[in-house]
Image (cartoon, rainbow, N blue to C red):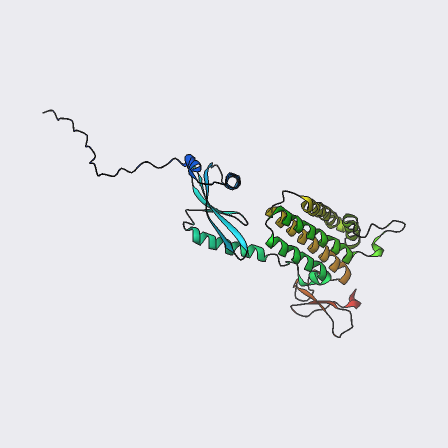
Length: 303
């Protein structure tokens, strides 16, 4: 017996038909007052962070101001995944791991607060004692970086970092560092004074590697902060890089000078600790290195 073909079922007049989803590549044309420039920058950022993926859509969904800082939240889609991109500074979060935007924003703010807290010097207390005024300038540069939003603000960070390096050579340079019959560099010539300081605190063939590194790092750092001071397209990343590099240079030269000037040992001969402090038994007596762990002090007569 042959079965008769079924007739197509006609939709009733009151039935609702769900239309297909709008193609993702067409969404950008349906957004009212879309900021093409910002969307392009966010898409480019996400593209750089995504491996083997193509960004297909970027849409700003929320803007919030928290403690004077503006956070823009973007919904970014690729051909394989979906992300939240939150600015100031910009970071990307996979929506599979962070499905709630509100939670993601709270996480982002907390993460950025911890990053900004790193503007406190990581140098040891002895290194900071060697140049206290210089480290205060570095902290002020970090505070300027926290508040920076526009290229001009990041240029200011570069200027403050440059002032740190100038203040460093003023604090460390000595007339005896200049070889005989040689004209001393100008007072604020950071590169030449850093070379003289490096020759003084890391002299001899055994210290050649340290000496070369001190000179190369200070020269490169000086070039970077000067570039940032005049960079019209400066970004947050540029400011953070300059600030971190300045800290590295201050720590290097502060440590080298401390070891040379104060004779601080690298390690305690009694307990093996690396922790030292400057100590004086009575006011007015020059301070000497003392182990913070066991109290050992090097006997001058044993030299």
